Length: 551
Image (cartoon, rainbow, N blue to C red; front, side, top):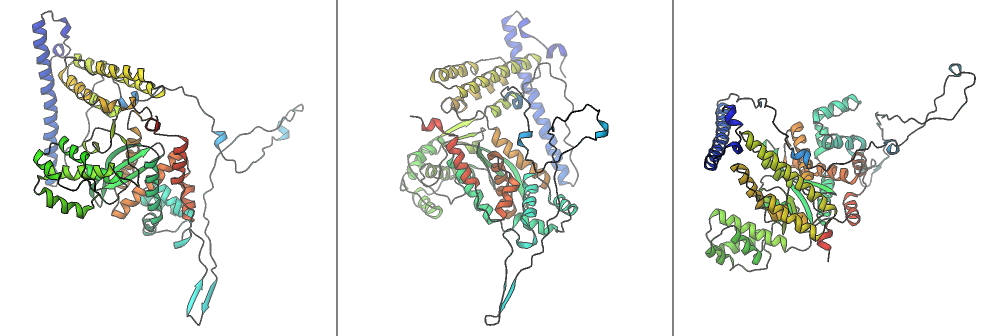
């Protein structure tokens, strides 16, 4: 703990310029040492916890100590990203379906003699009727002595397995839409008088869902075709007790989930291709990709011997690499595979190719699409992570964050009224904002890193329809996190596929304003899927790629 006088030192009060510069450097050195000390203590505690775990003991509980109140205003990226809007309480009465009417009369004995009847005043009260609808089917039965075969009348669609479409749809809705754990779901069904075992519930949720899996693939394909840009994010998940990753792709019309063992560039590319079989191609783009990744020139020359502008499947690709390229370092071989896969993706026909991704700054998202739009909210969090020790440095961070979010709001206004003169002004304002030097070394380094991302952060000036943040994908990822917190994780790969499928259906239905429970009921009864068609229809009504289609 430093002396309060030193901690709140104001450099502007020091008259000697040389002394002021020297003390400023010392303060930055102290900030660096304090930050390094925090990092080392956290790392030391993590290692001690790991040693305790290996010994069969428990580590230190993760309880954060109370922090002192900040001296100034703290700018929260979660709050500042929102546009201020006038709030008006809306009427929900018009949205309520009336099932029946009941007239209520006043006891005549309570009325005065001169009371006059003035009609009825409407008051709407909502309620639910939850009860059993058990059916005993009397199936016509025939026997053919000649064929020695019995013929039975089939049960109606959706009633197979001894449970009706209502129970099946409720099981899916409660599990994937409300994140209800299976034991609690069994308890709820028991309270409703339904006799169903845990195994039967598991079967309703996991087995014989091929139709829904095909619908999920169709939803994703329709979503990719609906817009040249997409949101993308990832979060951790567990399958069979092992760590995996959940990739989330979405736009305003749909949300799709994919559980994958890895989280590298090739995995993300496979997701963008809707898990199609990998294809590789060598062309000028692939060779340029290798140059950007620092692959030696001699190795790139050998890669150029592979037949160009030809799509190769996995087996043919490996043959060509061994024949023409030969030995490569593991890292360079990985870059070669990524370069050829990305080049094939961009040259593909027959399925939608994403032109722009709105993402955070993770490595695996880069070089996959022609253009990249970075999330301003995520970038702002880097500045919030700075924890300066001196009051003057804290004030510098707060002052800069205020300018940051003021500029962000200017970009929001530009999305509503785009134009070339305003785009040029905002580009110049970006340079002015992110070229300033505050004197706080950690802040200045962070500002310079953001300045280097100008082209990706200002992609909105070229494509005003894209959002400035990746919040829709992050919110969708939180849905998986909440599901994971309740149910830990699926026990099988088939279970993980069902998580992906039904979370995709639920997220998409919610965005399209479709009642998920009723939709699943109709699908269980055999109705055809309509969500893919609805995505295509909405995409015609609300074009999401106007700037790409502009002359």
